[in-house]
Image 1 (cartoon, one colour):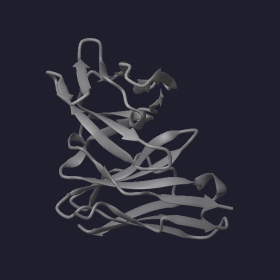
Image 2 (image 1 turned 180 degrees about the vertical axis):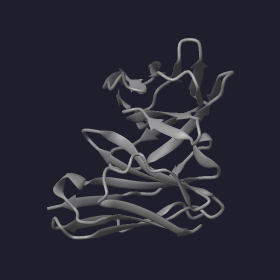
Image 3 (image 1 turned 90 degrees about the vertical axis):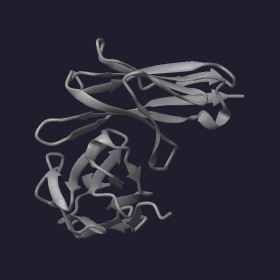
Image 4 (image 1 turned 60 degrees about the horizontal axis):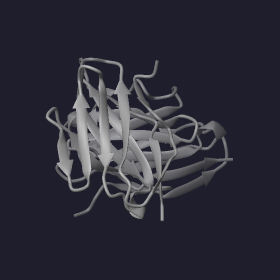
Length: 114
Length: 111
């Protein structure tokens, strides 16, 4: 079975550039989550969707971050313009029904902003 | 006070030992609880859900204490492959689910 698929696996770019991270959830899962992980702050929930609708985006750091889920099988997280402090590992996860069900994580995108 | 707190460790124990760690949560309305493990430079993976009555999966036992607001994870007969960071997750229901990961407890099993 295909798990959560994220792309790219690694991204290195210069500050000021737009960064787009992509995620394909597990088929049949109706909840999708975006997380950011750093050594300093641990794993932080940025936003999550239920049935393609954003439910809680209180973790989105600022207006430079935006997330979309145009259909049940695809989501993007965009950072524009990117800054060095955005460097982190970004994980996407999906679950069958929100936070009360186990989440399955993708391999993550390791993002470095120079 | 953090909403979910874990002892960061590291816990360094010999192979075959029993080790336990706790995760405390501050909101009594918390509803769902999980333990995940995360290996270095890998994604978190579900270890087990935590049920009110407690549950066991092989060498792993999870307990929930609602009165004292903590969950625990016990690992018996620890293996070298158990070395990882263990994250607890608490889900709080309000108008929308709130999901909080603990910062993790590092466990190192030595031969």
